[in-house]
Image (cartoon, rainbow over all chains, first blue to last red):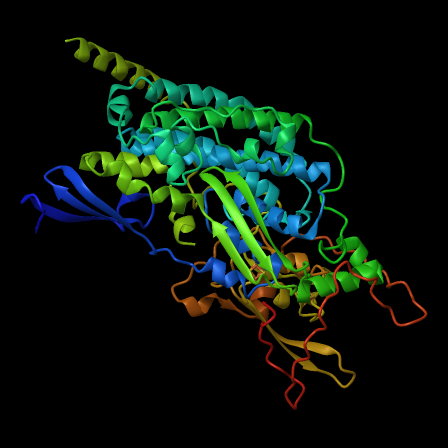
Length: 394
Length: 190
Ligand code: SF4
Ligand code: SF4
């Protein structure tokens, strides 16, 4: 029990770090006056992995598996950001097939991430069946990951200079199946949630933030767009050929939890549109850029050509050396702007790698969202930010 | 009163939507008795492959997989014969450290190492996850693979020089060797 300046007696409550509704090991220190939150302090660091520091001791190509582990719900986006940053530093142009495949897979990632979000968020607010349905649909996407890259979550599929392997044969069929199934299922979700009294009651007007405040706090992603600010890195600063695709950026109006939900649902639909375009326009061609010394040569060549063998050996043992300089590459990950800053000192390891994690920045606004509200709304607010603690702590 | 009605309406819509799924067959499987078919590429445990006819390991002790491993899960002990050729003594994979990234498989040129589609290797002790040559070979015996055609590298008149890489690479560091020629290799090329 504490005494506030006004003489009220408040209570400190620790929410987390092992709380199912904090979506990971987040601890929120709440100061409560009855049911009202007076002060909230997020405490992070329980999942610190030291990925940024670790990267300084690794050859460039060995950093890719580590980036998977930041936002483990969107591994392809993380890979993409890192690879694009290095390709920018090296000045590599990707062949069209790589661009299309990357866009397709990162958009599937966005759908998968939003599906997990909608499932867990609805579960937090009391709609149990949503979780099961959302995970069932996500399974379709995860199956594609497994067929494409070999792993369900830690895909490590993008490489600096292209893709690790070519797309598998039944890829088209699987993606078409998704394009058919998910829109139908989305209708089910909307029927369950959009007009549901309990869901609306717990989300409308809860954890509001205005557009100006959101910009000032540095928010990005659906939480920013839920407040009506039109900023999407895919449109504002196109990367990886996003300017070739036709899609809309959905915006909310009120900046509350319900609007963020609507924005994410609409984003899933827009992502499906992009996936459709990418699948239809998928060009034939090489799945890696021709850059000996940066990209591994094909296996057939390695055993028959001396140069390839040497390049292979050198790349594996010593990596490659990008020119001196620094580069920043931002992408729109499902959670917001994910940026990689890589500073190279002309050796084969990064001098410094800094990740601008959307979750970390978005989480910093939590006290603003929940102070003055009720304890029950804390859950809705944390859920609506869509944090992944692996990325917050890195 | 209105509230009650709209609440009941929501309830009915919800029950109707969930009820539609009631009749569908289950999408899960009863795990230990039924299994998913694993996609061909799926990356499970690291195994060593042996030649189909002779049963010998394909590994040529080139150490590339060890160098490529980001977590230093692979350790290779070897001897050198009188000609300086490496002879494999022990190939150790710590499956507990392995992060299943697949970089070792990419590095291996001789189809000697593969990430099999097997995934069940739980043990009671973490030491049991350190697998040595025989175990890795045994589990890899029935793993299908294609051996790449091995052609002789084109004969070159002079000592082969790499074509100039876009960026010059630093010279490899020489590692001191112990007297008897065998050196316990540590993966420091991270
Ligand atoms: S899969 Fe990755 S971590 Fe595991 S042994 Fe191979 S290179 Fe090392
Ligand atoms: S890369 Fe292949 S051949 Fe070389 S040591 Fe590893 S397993 Fe053996």
